[in-house]
Image (cartoon, rainbow, N blue to C red):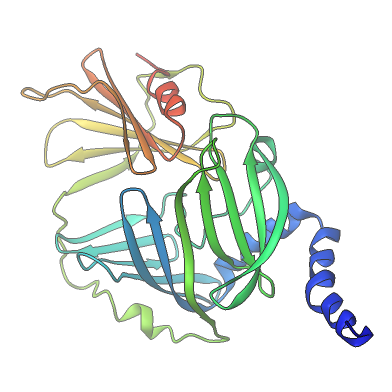
Amino acid sequence: MTFFKKLLTLIYFVFPLLSFAMEDPWLILEKSAKASQQLNYEGVFHSQSSSESNSTHVIHANIDNKEYCLLKMLDGAPNEVFCSGDMVYVTSQDGLLIKKRKNQFLFPSVLPSDIKHLKKNYQLSFGEKKRVADRMAQHIELKAKDNLRFNYHIWIDDKNLLPLKLIVTNNKNQPIEQSTFTTIAFSEVIDKDIFEKNINLSKVYVSKNKFIENYVSNKFWNLKDLPSGFKEVDLISRRVNGLNLLDYQIIFSDGLAYVSLFIRPITRGTEPKEGTVAIGPTNISARYQDGYQIMSVGMVPPETVNTFSGAIEF
């Protein structure tokens, strides 16, 4: 190899890797989280787990410091998700559901704005670079420090730090869910009309499962022995299908993983559920206590959802 070729090899492969290595890796992760909120882009990503596989077309923009996104499912039943600030509009064959964005993230916005909490639960390391959607991307591994959560492998774009690929692996390092861009293009400006013309807010929409969502001020339960590293990030109640009963959803997160804990009164003719079941990458733990169905749901190991469902005391 000539000196010139060796120099080119250093410039294109070694020097970029050194630039990542010299910078605080946690700072890079924080910049990546901001990139997913601030960049204008359009592309198609493919998501796959053991239970399903689908492709999604996404358009994202930040206009006057306000986030907009439009996701259209390309496989199966026609579904669209439209985001405007903290509001989310989900259209399907059943109608339209309007709700507030509740902490959970949609690919590629998989990282929290504040990554400090992640340091307590995950170890961060750099892996090898690879091409994703015809762009060079740096592999970052977030390895769980315990068996209460899964591992996250993220490939971020070399130039603008947007997450281009995500693989979630279990404690045996087996992939359980992944999402990756197959095509993506970035733009300085995206027309705001692309987003606003999709939802006619003057029309009365009815969702198949109507509910009233409220924040909860009075709790009639206590939580004990929660899994380490998880914090409560939201608590809401719903009155479902006109019944004079409320069910409750408590949302917990460690910064990457989310677990929902549901508390619902058992009504006449309803059979209580007990046990643990897996649906694709999601584990569900159910038990019956004092007239309530308690259920925890999350993409975490079975032991973790079992601990959550057993943490309720009345």
